[in-house]
Length: 410
Image (tube, rainbow, N blue to C red; front, side, top):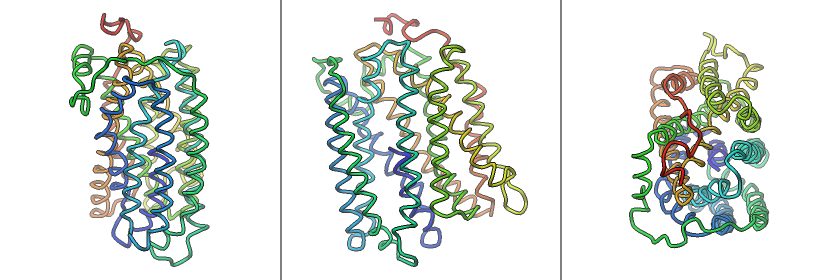
């Protein structure tokens, strides 16, 4: 959902450089904040009730939010962008409650040996949708926005996109009804205010299980870079390379293609090489990809040229998936069954804190680049430097999930 939302917002945000600055950082923070605020509650609900029920109700809520998005686009000339910011916040809220059910149900339906492949398939299908979403964002803006239209009139003309989103939300709701029922993980779990943050059982588990903490921190580092990547590609293509909205959307879509390919590749390779080697390839692939994208020639062209840009973006997405899937499998499988939903929620909280932070980091880097007159490709140099310590220092725990402690094995 984040990757679907940001390019759509960025289609306006990047164009606004002459009217008040690049708003991508703010859009990132608005979308990511609900995960930090509601992530704990979402994890509690995923363990207290059937995850299938949580998934279905979340999809119904998506229909409501997409309908509000349609109204916000139509009313933009009267109420400004405030309605769209509110809808973006609600999109994040809906996704925050959907995530623990979507990812927490996999360990309840599958054996541990099947999780890597299942996560690869889920990631592939998710990013296939993102490919179409991001690929359509730019053309929709180019086709439906009148030349010379003001920002608010341009937003009003994009109501057609919301109709498509409503249709997809309705279709997704019907598909969710086909998910087979699963037992409630913790039927007697009572609500406590601490569940709004990190609940006591999770704090205890994280204190005991240092590899789990390490995986959580590595996941945060990945999502910090992921949040920066989408904003950086939009900025690079739109500002430095002067690409159209359509071409910029296609460049973002190429990352999604790489992630879809990497999702399948990671699930397949993990059966032969193990998660640790897949993870290592992914980490260094991300560092190398960012470093290559950062090199700009004196005339402003990228070293790899426009022809090489699509290839590197696909490879960057592939490497990202090969890093993310082993971490996600580890975080899914390692906690005991009654804590899996809350573990996913804590993971979402931590990841989206990193994504919110990426918005703030992007704003700071954007101001630095403007002040120093650096090329936009410098964003990727900063990302390579940020992620390099993770690639050097992090190692996935050599033990298989559930082997390291009695609490996990139970």
